Length: 94
Length: 162
Image (cartoon, rainbow over all chains, first blue to last red; front, side, top):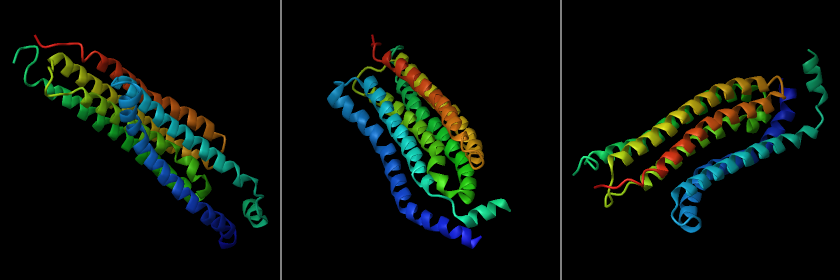
């Protein structure tokens, strides 16, 4: 188990730093971007019309969501090009 | 104070503000916690899939954002220096309840779907696309509530005290 776990640990630790930063960034942006887009668009874009500002905020929140989905799909595709090691194959055959 | 603009009218308005935030947050908490159980299960077997499996949690966060936006929207229409009719109070209450309870429903759905699909994603990677589709359908339930709240809120400024 430890021989198969070692390559996984190396890739995990390589990815861990990047994953945590990404998650923190997305958490902050999901909190900050919609509400700031509501107030900024209400004042500067829609001339006080709060309904359009609410629609803008909803749109901004969904943009953050779609960005997260796309980023997670792209992140999964690049490590997939690494071929699996032989010890993992023998583990699967068992 | 008249019958059309009683002193207790802002009670309903603020109840709408609170209801929108509280119930959509309960829905988001249900979604996050239930999906988090499945993600913890997935994380022990395949840690490289964690970034993809966090999508239900992000969607639950968006449900809470819907509640927040409606709360801010309704609270922006409450002004002590202006007339506030009972009609506007009921509209704000209805808008808050519409957004809050649909957020609760959406968060509930996201939680159960996220939990099961994330666990199935360990074994079959093609479950991912269907998971995202089902989660989007669950999410638009909250969006419908927000749209109804927006439509109701546009009518709140039309009434005047006699």
